[in-house]
Amino acid sequence: MEAKVISYDSSRGGVSVITEKGEVTTSYLLIQNAELSDSGKYSCSPSNADVASVRVYVLNGERPAAMQTGSAGLSNSSLNIVTLILLCLLYSFVLEEIQLNNTHFCARLRER
Image (cartoon, rainbow, N blue to C red):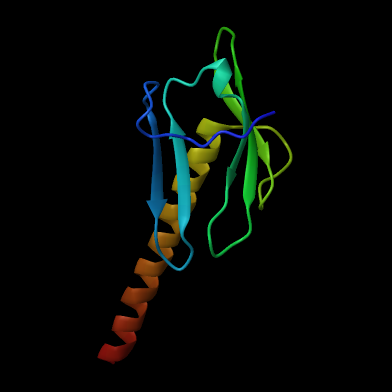
């Protein structure tokens, strides 16, 4: 199977990368209107870290869904991408709430 580089200006359109920078930088590949031909192995090879790969399966059916399995910390079980994104968002909100609570707690300690 031939490796292809994703092109953001291809005629297909609907492909974008969202990057969140922080202590740990995280990038998300968003493929809108996924088709069967979008199935395959996707790899991210940053210049300062190991390569991370994920295998994506786009399925046809009554309720089309995208499934992925991969390496770099992801479970080998098949997960629904929507569920994965929601879990990431929930995790992000929980971390933000913990940081906010710690900030308020430290501010109260300084006031005493």
